[in-house]
Image (cartoon, rainbow, N blue to C red; front, side, top):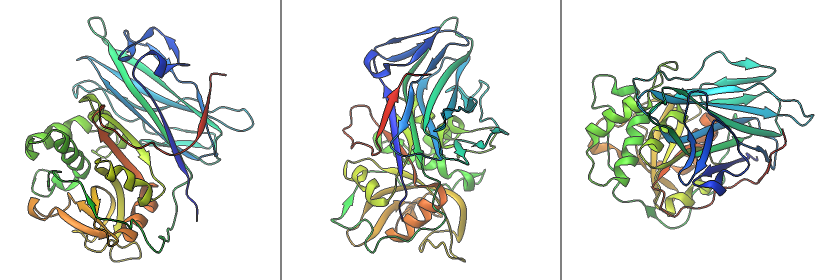
Length: 361
C-alpha cells in the first residue's frame, strides 16, 4: 500500500519569492509587502512529481489592526484545463477583523472542505494567490512565508508495517503538559489550540499553560467553521508570532520521526473508535471523530510518546500509544496531517516530495 505526499514553500527575501507575479506589492528582505486593499501576489505553477488529489495552503504573516489576507488556490489538470480560484480563507492576526473559511465552494469536481482542497480527479499543477484586504493606509502586510502540501486521497484503511517507529528511544524534553479538559467553559473542544500552546510553550520556555491557551484559542478561531480546528488558521496564528509554521502531510510515522530527532514536536490530526475497528489503546476518551495531539518522542520499543490534551488533568497528559495504532488512526483520519512549528533559526530536515516550478500561465 503506497500513500504519497509532498510539499513546497517560499519564504524570506527577493530570491525566495522568485517567479511570483505581483500586483500592487513588492518584495523586500522580509518577504512580500502588500501595501493596499487588493494587493495581490500569485505564485508560479507548482507541478508535483505525481498527480495529487488534495492540497492544503499555509501562510505566515502579521497583519495590521484593520487588515487581513485572503489565500486562494487554483489547480490545473493534465489536459491544460484550470479550475476557478478557490478561497482557503480570509485571515487576520487581529481577531476583531473579519475572517473565516469560506463555505459552499465546489465546481467541476473540485471542492473546499474548510482548509483542504479536494479534487475528484488528480490534478497536474497547483498555485497559490494571496490578496490583502482592509485598511492599509498606515501599515502593510508582510508575507514572510507561504507553503503548499499535496497528497493522494487519504487512505480509507491502513495496515501498518510490522515495525513502526523502531530504533532508539528519543524524547523531546521540556514540552509543557497541558490538558484541555481542565477548562469547564468549552475546553473539551480545544484540542487544537491546547496542542499548539504546548508547542509554542516549548519554544518559549517558561510560558504558563493558561494564558497561552486563551491567546491561542482566540487567535485560531474560525467563525465560519465554528471551531478551533482549522489547520491553516492554526499555522497562521503560530506564524504571526514569528515562528515558521505550516501544515504538512506525512506518509508514515517513520517519515515524521526525523522531525522528532531534530527536536521539533509534531501536532498530529487523528481520530479513533475504541468500540470499533480503528482503535487507539490508552486514549483518554473512547472515541473521537477528529482530534489534535502532540507527538514528542518514541520509546524504542514500538510506542509513540505523546502529550495528550484530552487527558483529564495536566498530570496525566504524558502517555504512550502503540505506534502502529497511532499511524493508522492518523493516516486514515487526516492523511497524515501535522502542524510544523519551529523558530526560523532552528535546523530542520528536508520535507519529501519532488516538484518543478513554471511561470507559464
